[in-house]
Structure formats: C-alpha cells, structure tokens
Length: 284
Length: 258
Image 1 (cartoon, rainbow over the protein chains, first blue to last red):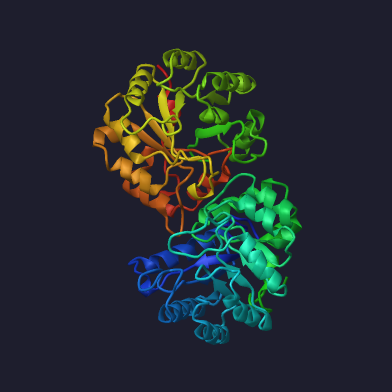
Image 2 (cartoon, helix red, strand yellow):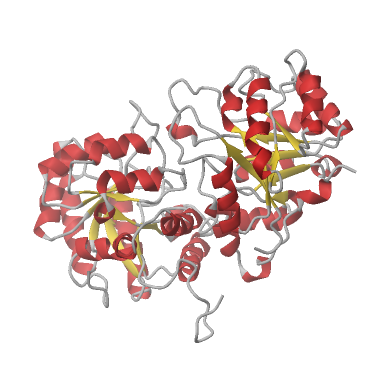
C-alpha cells in the first residue's frame, strides 16, 4: 500500500508514534550481528511508522558483565554507544541512560554526564529491587530534571529469578509512592509474567504508566489495561519484538479505542512525560 | 492476504486460567472476515484440560453447526483412552481435517506408543495430527498449570515413526522448530509443518531466518485465537523484507481427503 506520493504508507497508520522501549546493541555486546540488529530495528520501525525510538543499551548485554548487574565500565560503554546512535540518527532516536544503582556515586555522575549529552530518561533494570532505598537518589535526580524512569518489571515476580533481582508492579508502586512526582514506566506488560496481577496493582497509583511492549499478545490484555488505568497511562513500545508491537497497534483499532485515546497511547502521553523538546516537532 | 486460506490454530471456548473476550464461533467468523482468512480449523479449548475429550468434542461439533461453511472442527483424540478409535471415526464423520492431541497434558511422554498409534490411524484416514507446544508463555502460568511445553523430542519421535501422518505443530518458536526440523531426515521433514503464530519478527527476524533456511512451504498460517491477538502473523508477514513478501505458505486445503 502506498500513500498519495507513492511512498509506502506506514503499516501502523499515519501520525506520530513513539517507541518508549527500544534496545540497541554495541560492538562490545558479544553479538557479531550487532550492527545488523540495530539496522533491522530502524528499518522495521520505518515500515511500521515509528517516529522516535527511545532506546537503551544495557552495558555489554552480558558479554563482560551481567546484563542486569552491569559494571561501571560497561554501563558507560553502553550509554556512550547509545548516545552515539542518537547522534547518528538524530531525527529518530533518543536515549535512556541506563545505570546500576549499586554503584551509587557512579550512577548519579553517569546520569548527569549522559543527560548533558542528550539522554531523555533513566532506565533501571533489575540490579536492585524498586523497594530499595538505593534507588532514591536516582529518583531525586529524575524529579529535579523532569526525566521519566523506565523500570524493568517481571509481572508478578517469583521469589527469585536467575540473573536478576526483578521488581514487579507492587515493588514499583512502592517506588512510585515514595516519588509521586516522577513518571515511572512499568516495562513491558507483555514481557513475561502475569500481567493481570500488574493491572490490579497499579490501578490507583497515578504516576505508574504501563508500557505495552513485549512479545506477549494475550487477547484481553489491552482491553483490561485500558479498563484498569485508562488510555492516559498507557504508552506504546515494542522492546525486542516489533511484530508484536505492530499487532497491538492494529488491535487497538479493533477494541474500540477512540482516535484521541489512540493518539495518547501512540505518542501524546510520551511526549508529555519526557522533557520538553525531547521530540522535536511533537508537542503533546 | 496473499495465499492465506486456513487458520489452522484457532479455537473456541473458555480457558481455565484467565478470562478470554468472547471466545465463541460467531466472533471467530468475524475475526476471520477482518483478517481476510477464508476458513479455520477450530479446536475446543476447554477440552484440552479434560481427561476424556468426548463430551468436549460433542460441544465443539454442536457449536460449529451454524458456521460449517467457514469453520472445520479439530476435535481432540486421546489415544491412550478407551474407545479412542471411535472418537477418531466420529471426527471423520463430522468432517474434521485434523485432530488435536495434547500428549503433555495427558502424561504421554516422549516416544509413547499411543501417539504412534494415533499417527498411523490418522494417516489411514488422511487426518492431520495437530500438536500444541503451549497455550501461554511459561513465565505467566498459573501455579497449578504444570504440564510444561511440548518437548521437541516428542514431535521428533512421532515424525520419525514413519506413520505417514501429516503433523502440524502450533505455537512453536524458532528454537523448537529448528530442533525438530534439523533433527529429521529430509523425508521425515516433508510431513511436518509449523504454524506462524509464535515466531518472532524484527529486529531478531526469526521468522525471516527460518523462512530462508527451512522454507516457506514448511509453514501454515495460524493465529492462536482466542488466546492471542490474531494480528500477529499478519504483522510478521507485513514486516518481511521485499524479497520474501508474498512468500507462499503451505495451503492445507490441498490436503483434503480424497
């Protein structure tokens, strides 16, 4: 299908679209195909109609230190690579700055260094549970600089998960209640675990926003997410599977979402929650 | 949609572990219309969790009666249950083109002889054997849902038995598909197909990869409805690179009983 100019029409339809949960790779990622994977994301994003990819690189993705417990050197290398992609792809890529809260002083310095280079939000993964006070200085930094926080989540976490100390919605609600002025994106409700537990937990915590990304495409998930928190607290993302992200956008069109709510989920909520000017040309 | 003729992986009915929006046959027909899919092989989701599938199959046949121009029943046949051959005959009488089997749910381990018996009986009747790898992501399952995913070894064992039955594996990802496909001889591979409902697209591009390495003809169109969004396979096909656009999956209607 092509538009009036003969260009391929975006598969997700016209209008802005912000992917709040993108990942990229770097030379030190331990994957020979890292450049191909980055190109694949951008190419698929173009076909879908992604206007902005907000991405992160979690250190070396386990090549030199664990993905969820990155060393300071790997953290800096990942963030540098991500900011490098942002500079190269200035018209379609923005960066989260990813940090490991265990190295508190380093993490704060890294937030400042990367924010000054153009990072627009903070990515926290699973190096420390969201209930831990070690996260508080980072959240104070987020508030002072109007940065949203994208926090990795395991939807209803088990007692332990190999390779990470994941947080679930209850943990994130603790964090959100301690820091009510910071917008927290609860990562990938389709990314593993029991999303219905998440929906029940976040309903009354207004600064927790649900990122729709993840490979999970359970029917009923989108409907119930809308019912639980409303379109004003949903943000679109793809994470590791752009195909399921596209399917969810198509599904929004058939479950009765209004055009205004659709725009809110596609981009307006994100444009409102990131720092002003994060997405040139887009104003919520 | 290019050559999509049948959704092999649709079901109707409730799921024990979460609410599914309107999982009925009438809604399924509407979904097929929206997705431009002419027909579907339809299983009965509750029956997957029954010990004896007979009554669930009856419900399936009954609920599909008004929609038989679009929906073909895919009943469950449990080959270690008394009278299973009669259930297979009834499937033929009801016009089924495939029967579903759930060896993990029934406690039938790898190389269980009953599954081989089922394969032979299905081959004699030109029925495909449809095997489901999973209903949900392993990370979200209910605490009592402990059956686990269907092992690749179970699929290989049935395929290696030389029954002559067509085997359709649904809800498999790249790893399992590759483990089965490359674990069979070329002749054995020719009787195994995989549905498209649980294969990742870009940026990893699993779907593109296995279309190139294994070939589009080993795949059949599946949605996983009503458990999964029916749009996923359409999205995956739409995101294929230009040289694979229009890749022709296998058309199961060519398997009609002769």
